[in-house]
Figure 1 (cartoon, helix red, strand yellow):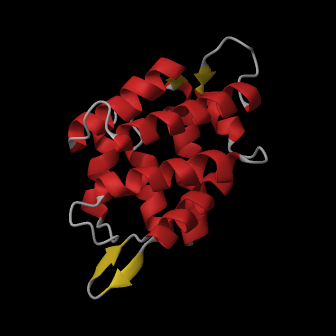
Figure 2 (tube, rainbow, N blue to C red; figure 1 turned 90 degrees about the vertical axis):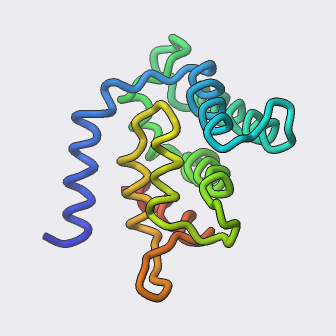
Figure 3 (cartoon, helix red, strand yellow; figure 1 turned 135 degrees about the vertical axis):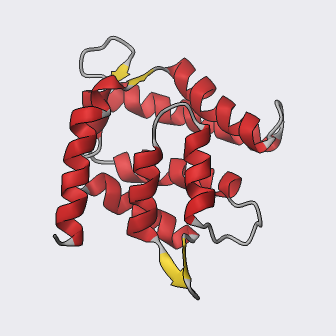
Length: 166
């Protein structure tokens, strides 16, 4: 099976199994994503980094409510979220900024090169089950550095774009 065929197969599996259980609210973005990430990586309340992440979460929420909340209930369900992938602006307003924001937290050596372990550890810290997304983004954007694959800033952008465009 080609890499593209494998990606499409995994994407269909995700839509069938994980997506129906997604229920995103503004509170879940701030608590389950920002709060858990910050707790896991030692980013304190009131710190500039936490404030930046909370602003980003609020921006993401505003975009999702405007572009993805098709039933107007104030909750972004899995089908609505997956449906947002193809909407104009999703990749540049949601996928890339969120993925890039997470990169700094996942880089313990601060060398701007993430191993698969560092990358998945970040996503496993969130309470959203996005490890599948993390693996797909890593696989799409990783490059070789010696005998290991790493994810750089450019790889994050490439991987997030490919994953969400797919």
